[in-house]
Length: 161
Image 1 (tube, helix red, strand yellow):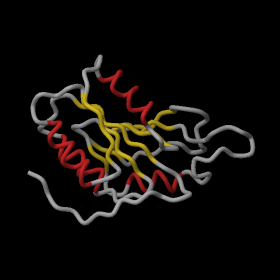
Image 2 (cartoon, helix red, strand yellow):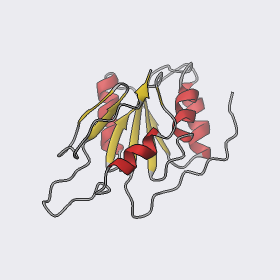
Image 3 (tube, rainbow, N blue to C red):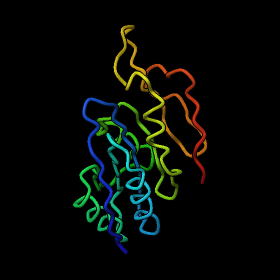
Image 4 (cartoon, helix red, strand yellow):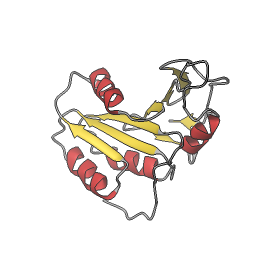
């Protein structure tokens, strides 16, 4: 059942952008709560990329309904070669300075995405040394190096299952 929200997710003009990638296949039981969890982060500069593997259980209908109402949601639905393939598609679509993954049946603690954006003092911009500091993949339970050099103190443990 769709809920009404008055959340305002804006582009963080000139600031850091965060891309959260959610791979899903036939995830009707979890997709709405996953989408709502990201919406409720109320985080500027956020995009939620949902990669559906061609679901046939109504998952796409839920994604489509929320994507019409929330401009930060980008999505595709097409057959893929599994979760890794879906994650790679999401990475190719991502526009963010920081990339994170949220599996459809997991969630983030309140405000954790805003805290992650605040954590990167360079704002994901290329510093004078030419090394881009936007390299963490946010996973439930841990943060791991992902792309480029990892910013100092790159451990964030604000996630739970």
